[in-house]
Length: 218
Image (cartoon, rainbow, N blue to C red):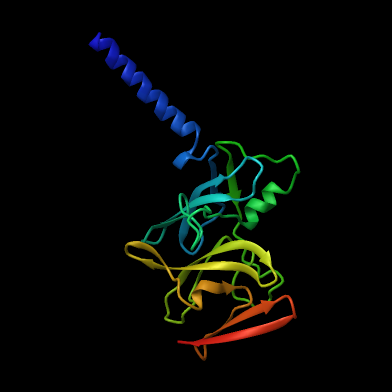
C-alpha cells in the first residue's frame, strides 16, 4: 500500500510539473519565447512574453540581459506586478515588435511555446529630435547626465507625446526604478539638454492645444 501510494505521489508530481510547463510561467496560460537577432549594447537579450489572451497584443514580460563583455547581468520583469498606484490593475507590456507580428494578419493568435525573433529598431519615428527610440522596447540612455546609462522601458503608447518610458538605475542588486520627477513622466517630447544639464518636461494639452513646460536642472 505504501509503495503504491509513493508511486501515485510521484506520478502526481510529474503531472503537476508538466501542467506547469504547459500552462506557462507564473500562472500564465500562454508563454511566448522572445529573443533579439543580435546583441544590444553588449547584451544578449532573451525572455518571455505572456499575453493576457491568445488574441491580445498586451500582456506581461520578462527580459533577461546577459552581458557578453564581462558586465553585470540583470533581469527586467513586470510579471505579477500591478500598475503604479492601482493594486487592482495588472502591469501591462506591449511593444512595436509584438504589434508588428500581431497585426500583420487579422487571424494571428499567440500559442503556448511560440518563439519570436525581434529586431532592435533605433529609429525615432515621427519624433526626429528625440534621443529616445520610438520603436524599441527598451533603451540604454544617460537621462540624468551623470555619465552612467540608465535602463529605459517603453510603453508603446503611441499618444500625442509619443511613448511613455519607465526609468531604472542598473545596480549591483538589480534594477531600481526612478519614481521622482521628471523621471516619472519621460516621453518622446521630453527635451534633454546635456550641455546645460537640463531636462524639459513638455506636457501636451489636447483641449486647448497648449504646451506646458517644466524644467529640471541637474
